[in-house]
Amino acid sequence: MKIGMTLPVTEPGWSRAILKDWCRNIEQGPYDSLALGERLCFPSPELIATLSAAAALTERVRLHTTVLIAPIHDPVVLAKQLATIDVFSEGRLTVGVGTGGREEDYIASGTELQRKRIAEMERCVTCMREVWAGKIVRDGLLRPVEPFPLQTGGPPVLAGVFGPKGLASAAGFAAGIAGMSMSANANEAAAANDLARRCWRTAGREGAPYLTSSFWFALGPQADEQMRVHLNRYFNWLDADARNAMSEQCGFRGDADALSERLREFAAAGCDELQLIPTSIDPDEVLRAADAVHAFRS
Image (cartoon, rainbow, N blue to C red; front, side):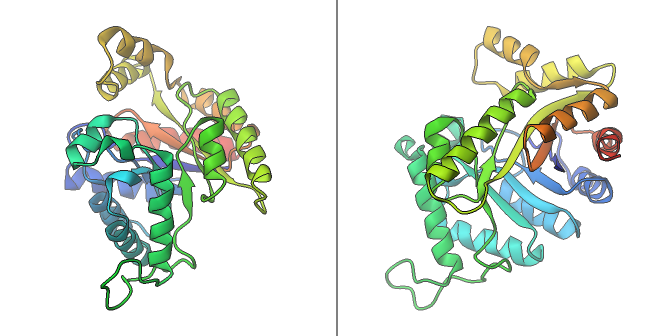
């Protein structure tokens, strides 16, 4: 199982220096990928700009979006942006797409709420692939929209979906799943992975889906408090009682040995890749988690 590290973009306080430190630590650490997600109504840096910077600040790790909220973007413009990043990263881009969990991202972007649907996400992916293939996708264009991606056929697209209906839809257009385990429980990931494989077989897809999962983590003696602070901020649309419940129940908190064992459980659950989600903006979180990753691979 590959291991990735997510930029904690929903934490406040981002700067050029902090981004450089995070990218350097992930690039030099025992990680296979660097990931980041998209939120508009948060202190998070904008996804495309941050992804572009990460492409320039790294050489080795793959770059994952976990996930990009596809329906709030114009698919032609987005296709050009992602193709540019694929070129500048020398083919290291994997695109995780989703509909997003928050209506406010649609409101902020001026996107109709009725577009918050898997079918809209699928149409966006279809359009992007046509752009990447050099097709004239809109009347009046004199030439295709370039640059074309470095990866043949464009970057792999993973669907950030859940449940039977979402996974069945993903089997029609995605290379795999950009999963998430709220509980950080490998049984949750195993059930999702089994369902995804069944959906792929039912759809008549050749080969197996690329299965990723992710979970929040906090390490050390202050892990519980760190997790509570982070998740109370993240779940800001919930009432206080619900926020407190989620901050107590979600994510992994413990030491490096326990995290290493949890990684083994997710590998046994059939994950091809796991993205760790930090709950602190401190770039040294990358180094602290590295001990668990080394132990997992030993």
